[in-house]
Structures are given as structure tokens and as C-alpha cells.
Image 1 (tube, protein in one colour):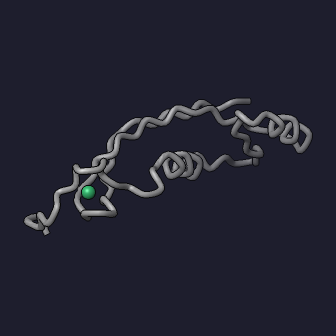
Image 2 (cartoon, rainbow, N blue to C red):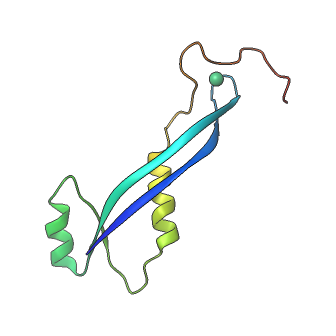
Amino acid sequence: MRLHVRVEGVSTLRCQRCLGDLPHTLAIDSVVMLARDAAELERLEADPDCDVIPLENRLDLVALIEDEVLLGLPLAAMHAEGECSHGDARFF
Ligand SMILES: [Zn+2]
């Protein structure tokens, strides 16, 4: 069984250099495979391109989407070089 997850939207991150707002466009499009048992889990995990989760009685869809969104965020949110609003603290 496969689950196609698509999330689109814009979130605002904080630039870690100038602390200004940094718009971040979310565009997540991934396929998650749901393994019904241990054998299937093992088989699917052998494929490095595959995102596999064990299928439990209840699938926590919100947690799954949250994970996908968090994985898609940059580790260090920062404006591109030279695009920071240096010393501009008007909004704070
Ligand atoms: Zn910045």
C-alpha cells in the first residue's frame, strides 16, 4: 500500500543571521510505503528510495505529515548571501 503525500504552502521562518522573516515555500511531494507486516517492511526498506512505515491499526496521518514537513525544512534557515536586512530592526 502506498500513500502519496503532497503539501504546498508558505511558512515564515526566522533567518538565523539577521533574525528577519524568511519566507519558505513548502512543496512536499513524497510517497510513503505502508508495510503490512515485518516481511514486507524488510522488503521495502531494502529500496533506498523508499520511505517505509509499518502500518499499524491506526495511522496517525497528522504526525506523518508533520514529519514530512519538518524533514523538508532547511536545517539552518538563512537568507541568501547579501540578502539579509543588516541592522534593520524597525519591526522589532
Ligand atoms: Zn537574513
